[in-house]
Image (cartoon, helix red, strand yellow):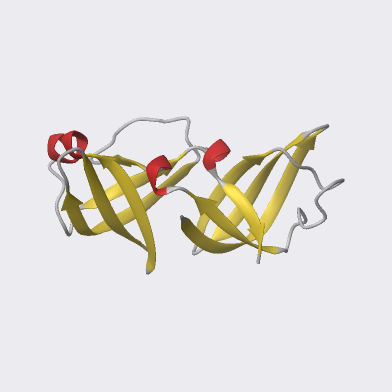
Length: 133
């Protein structure tokens, strides 16, 4: 599980769901969660939280151009790439914080990934969970 510490900067809620913005290492993350400030008191601007997301939910883009609907786009460097028969594990550096992605080996080879590459790690807002710090 990837874990990045940040601070809530904004909360937009409807009756049962919230879109939460978190600032971490100069980057804005967004998380779509089934909670609101009414039933989760930690959903308050200024509160420290951990941004959590699974390794399998981190997509990789290399040389991307154009717009994309994902809000969580992290500029990262591939620190290490381990390829198996089916899956590849990428150790990524995000502002000195380790992030891990697991993608298919096919995709890693199609992208020509190797250590030292500058790529983007993408995570959908609904795949990010928050935990009180």
